[in-house]
Structure formats: C-alpha cells, structure tokens
Image (tube, rainbow, N blue to C red; front, side):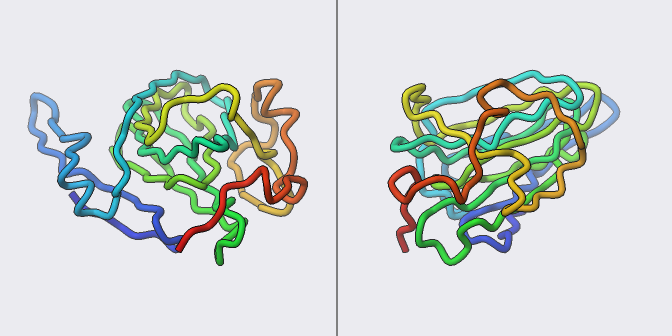
Length: 185
C-alpha cells in the first residue's frame, strides 16, 4: 500500500495494492499492523456503510466529546470528500483537505479525530464505507455549515440535497472553544 501524507498533519491518502486480472480484482481494505506502521495509532471500533444518490451532501460532521477518526473509502460510485481541521489551537485550524474517492480509484482517506468530515456524491449514486475510532454518540453529534464562507471549500455542486440538521448547521466561527476539540501536540 502507498501512503501519502497530506498538507495537514495526520491526514493521509492511502492507495491499497490492487491485484487484478480478467476475473476482477482483490485488495486488502484494512490490516491493523500496516495501518499502524502508516501512522494511524487509533483503533477502529465501528464500521459504517452509507448509500447516497447524486447531489447528496453529508457533512460537515464531527462528534464532541467522543471524537472520531475515520478511514473512508468508496466501494462504488464517486464522491468529493473533505476533512476540516477544527481543533482549537491547531496551527492548521480551519484548513481543509479534499480528495476524490471512487470505486474505480479505490483510494482511502484517513480523517483524524478532531476533524470535521463531509462528502458529496458526484456520480449517479455511491456506496461509502467508513471505519470509526470511537462509537457513534447521538448526543455528541455536531455539524458545521457545508458552505461556510470562512472555509471556502470548492464543492463541485451548487445546490446539494441536505438533511435538515446539515441545513441548519452553524459556521465554524460561530462555535465556541468549548464546542470544539482541542489540539494536542
């Protein structure tokens, strides 16, 4: 597997080794030892799978206080995926990374704890998988406005379909220090 460190420390792009022939392909989607060597120290405790249609935008989500790191991958279709550093005190606070994930490119994206995460489906539909480093906690569920002008994320859609929760989300600048994860060196 090839691991590419992105501009923001801790965010990783992972290209699994794919073995293919005329019958199809095989790839290892997770191996704890290899991912630990790649710098992912957290353990994964929950796997999630979501199916969405074109133009659906999910995010930007995070949990407080039970922060989740996520290893994300698309099994079919294509998404524009985003990770935003929202750790109070971080030298890259408010900075974001993006990647196109697809069933075709088979890339993975590691979003560390303390980041908000979101994606929009750019194909007809997408099957999206994510491994989480902490359990889902509905009481700690939080969102940041997907089109926050302070973040200036170049989403490849103008009018996505959103949940009411995502539609009512606040800008990052409207969140208090107590509502955000803390940066730890």
